[in-house]
Length: 135
Image 1 (cartoon, helix red, strand yellow):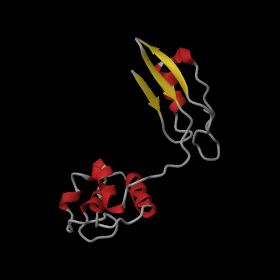
Image 2 (cartoon, helix red, strand yellow):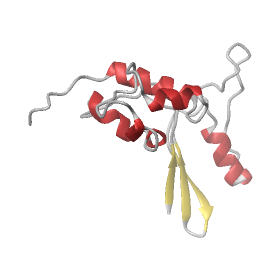
Image 3 (cartoon, rainbow, N blue to C red):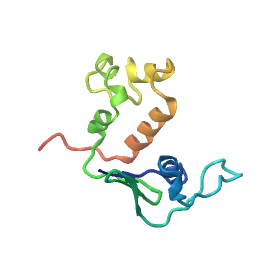
């Protein structure tokens, strides 16, 4: 019955809340002329009623995302759009970064996986630590 709207700064979370109920008139910022992106406007979380006992929480934008207890070898499992192609990779332990015969990389080339999504995967992969396979 309560949904929180979360995401990066300036992506339109407050605009989405206004679209759900225009009478709320949640404050929104202008689009930056320089970047053509929304600007950080919401400074605190606020609960809004939508009716029928349901609510939405508009939250401030996330400026940085960090990961805990996720290691490089586990990351592909968090990218559901890789799931269909990854089992077809040439190597069973494919990182989807540089291996020949990687079907995820081929899927990006064919447009089956968004290039920006794959770029995000690579950036996250680079930020993660290797894990020992010993437990």
